[in-house]
Structures are given as C-alpha cells and as structure tokens.
View (cartoon, rainbow over the protein chains, first blue to last red):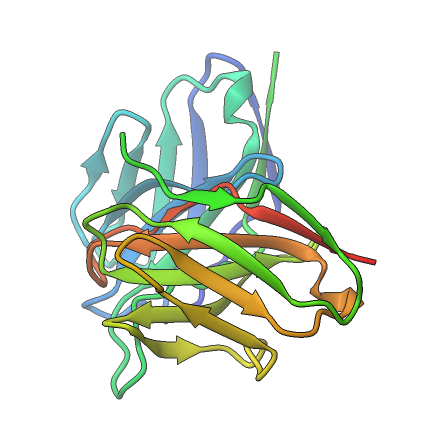
Length: 115
Length: 114
C-alpha cells in the first residue's frame, strides 16, 4: 500500500472548518483513500473513503486532487468533540497472495479543536 | 447502527497466563481483524481472518497468538503465555468485503500484564 504523509498536528477554532491534508504521491490507480480518527484510546472510527471522486457524508467531505497524489479531509464545523488523531490511509490491491484489505496506520494528525 | 463489540473492556493477567479476548463482529461481515496499540504508539495490524482461516498475519503474530471463530458470531484472540510487552489495547475489526468496504472497529480490550 502507498505511503501517506500527514502533518503531525493542527489546531482549529470551534465552529470553523478543519481542513486536514494528506499526501499520497505513490498511490496507484486502484487504491482507495480512507480516513479514520481515534479519540483518546477508543477504537479507530471510520470517517469516509474515496477512489477519485470527491465524497461527502454526514461527518465530513473528502477532496481528492485530480492526479490523486493528495487529498483533504474537511470537517465543516468542527466541535470540541472532533479533537482526535486523524489517519489518512491508502488501501488497495497488492499483487500476490495474502492481501486481505487490512489497513496500515501511520502516526496521523492530532487535531486540537479550541474554544 | 450495528457495531463491533469487545469483551472484557479491561483484562489484568499475570505474566505466563493465557488470555482470551473476545469480539462480536457485525453480523453480515466476512472479514475479521485484530490490531493492537501499545500505549503512545501506532495502531498495529496483527492478523486477518476470512473463511475460517488466517489470511494474513504480521511479524508480531507469533506462535503465542491464535485466533478462532468458534461459532457464527464470536471471534477470539488467544495469547498463550502472556509477556509484559503484550500489555496494550487490542482492537477487533470487521468488514463486509475488501477494498471498498471500510473496517469497523470495536472499542478495544485493555490488556495489562503484571
């Protein structure tokens, strides 16, 4: 799976949009971009995923650049409860046996939402 | 909304003892996973399970670890002889399919080995 690069930390004011960037310059054509977050030591929570089109759900929007080498997760109106570690993960095909769709977590971006 | 449930939430055991961590995946899911997270470190993949067999495992998943789906609903992780370094949060996850189906995680079991 392609490697991703995220800033280690970001701050956002409560009520403002939080824009979390992710670089995945080695992504291949059949790999998806997934976003998860982890609040304290809870289990990772799925947010959104996409292949090449922009995606939106009730939690967030995902903007993927046309060349697919980077993406941005947007939380439109951040609240204090959105303070968490956010993980951008590329997931997809690997040639050969033994690939089971697992996710590989990096260090993520620690988002601090401030009042 | 269906969710992955894990029990117990906290398990304390003595070094050398066997522990079994339990998970109930989401009912229509076919792929099952265990991850662990040592305090302050990354979430690490341990093993994936599909069609009643291990489909992939990491270097961490050595002979001390085993997984089982004893019935149609439970998915367990057994550690045969626990070591101090096994102290961690253990997360179970499940998904419907592979690349276009997200993994859904439980809230974990905190294992403390003394």
